[in-house]
Amino acid sequence: MFFANNSHFSAKMISRTALVIAMTSVINQIHVFMMPQGGEVSLGTMIPLILLSYCFGWRITLLAGFICGIIALMINPFFYHPVQVLLDYPLPYMAMALVGLFKQRIFLGTTVAYALKYVFHVISGAVFFASYAPEGTPAFLYSVIYNGSFVVPDWLICCLIIHFLPIERIINAMRDESL
Image 1 (spheres, rainbow, N blue to C red):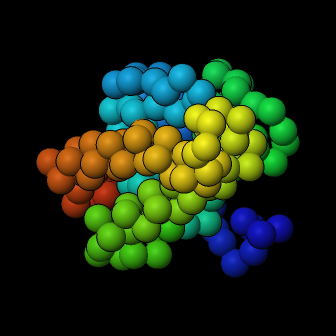
Image 2 (cartoon, one colour; image 1 turned 180 degrees about the vertical axis):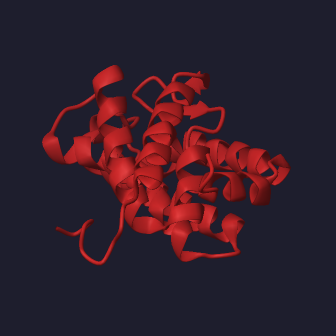
């Protein structure tokens, strides 16, 4: 009901969303490096979701992000607890929906979305992966450093790629009725 309320999901929007989910899932398999206890830097995994949110808004991107998170969990499961699964899989992808709230400010929206993604990972790390922290290191500090070591580079790569993309052409093509 949340997604259907006051929203019109056309066949075009649904088909474009399916393509975004597929692209996100494929790009998610291309890693620059992977962390030992989960997390990785990719070559722009979140860009399709960011563009979807920028083009069609936050609601459809919440749904697409949830699906992408579930697919990522199925492809590369790393879990201890159901709440940790939510914090590390669907919620970080769903955070990209925030970009849709920053019309004409894609870099600000991307930064805010990645900040929320980072918060989800830090909470998960501090609560569920505290045992990996070196002796004498507070779990929260360890989680901040560990998760920052892959979320920040991933965000920088994403922003760099977006900088060189012809955003207006892509958005116009996504919205084009004739396609």
